Image (cartoon, rainbow, N blue to C red):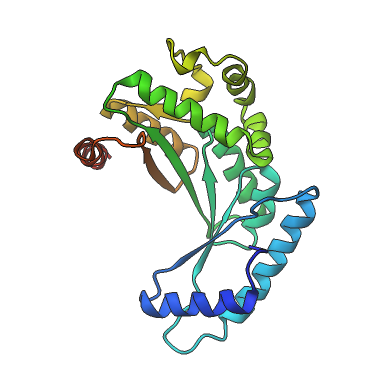
Length: 234
């Protein structure tokens, strides 16, 4: 958010709203929070207030967009809930999502959505290939300090670290800890996917966003069949 010029961003939002018949949802994130994340969050929320005021000057027929703020941890959820139309969670367990939802609702009783990316990994080469793809994504995210801190809060950081220390899983048998299977799935059956989605809804996630991942070079027909299967399951 702080990497964008406010006036330019305001004009871009106005243009997108006008072209899309007011269907834009503005997603806001901290980016790299730097050495003082609390100060960064404060600056972002102040910028949001400024943007909302600027959005009020849109011409007739162009509405201010809904604003969703990325929230990984409890502090951000509490502070952003007062300003945002929705919070956007990512790569967390239903248990962690439930804590963020509860914290946000204490700050703001109603009128806010809770969206969450549900990352699901698929491979036509079988479950172990999909599991390796999933583990690599956990490691990729864990390399970002803000996500590592979220994994610590979620109780998954220790399980992730074992795959950083021992790389036999990249070519040998894969044994995914149950802590990580609360967060994500690999080549799930339809009933497994339904129960996974249900767990997030019960945690208070009002807008679960299924996010399928595939290996690089995956067969296009397999991708299409998988997406169709997801749609029919849910």
